[in-house]
Amino acid sequence: MTDTLQNFSSFPQEVQSFSILELFSQAGGFQWPILAVLIAGLIILMLRMVRLIRDDLAARPLKQLSLDSITLSALLEARKRAADSLYTQLLSGLIQLHRNPEAMGREVSDIATASHAAYERTQRIVNYCSSTAGGLGLLGTLVGIYALFSTGTRDAQTIFAGIAIAVVSTLLGIITSILLEFFEAVMHGYVSRYIESAQMWAQKVRSYILSITEGDV
Image (cartoon, rainbow, N blue to C red):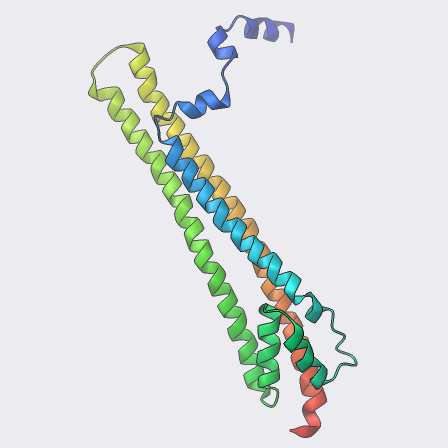
């Protein structure tokens, strides 16, 4: 351990004082578009998360309904009072088609599919941002290699600058792509569970509506 500390203390001062900001600055300008892509992707995911949270808050009065004793008219009144959400859409479709069991099942499936499709649009944008970050990193690699070999110089500083652009821009592109893919995967899990939970709730409501209207069919 002592030898390791002594070896580290013998490193040049520039190496000891190296920081992430210095690494970031070595990308030859490619760090800024890559950073912009990262921010754009995170903002898109954040907006989707906000919409999901708002939808969940709006749906809470419906999720808290007791289906053991509620009447169809009470369901109608609850739908009118509830703010717009995935649960409200499901309940509206079920009530509207309460005399057609097969149509009720299709309506639940169609609404869930539409919700998935709405999220998939966000998913495609985030995936595009991820691919763009990787592409910018690769472009930085090519520019760095070109800067390294086009001058034909043996100056150490010029060589280091070309290598730094190639390596750091690639590194930033990969990190950005990994981060966006990770957060998108987390968001996908939340959205899928939310829609599946809404479908399960809708199936319970469907069964209850059929049970209380069975005598009228």
